[in-house]
Image (cartoon, rainbow, N blue to C red; front, top):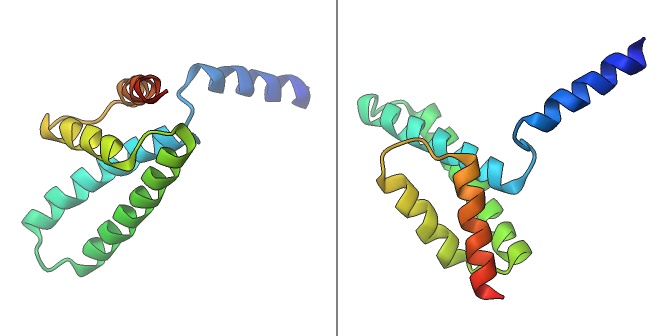
Length: 109
């Protein structure tokens, strides 16, 4: 009985996005950075949130470097892609980001 419930959980998770992938984590951190930066514009003396923002920025930077090594896409190209997505002032979508990274990877091959 436990085995069947475990299999059903796995099949449900396959339909969702791959939350452990580097691309998903970068998108997630980017959305968190947007939220925290807007929070800090209102609450300028919230130093704990500022520290959390700096930690998330560091994590995202390390993931971007890892992604550029893994996919052979230069760090500058990935950073420009994120900047373009940030300029739209909407949440960054995982699927769109993944497709754009794949396109950049095909160009560099």
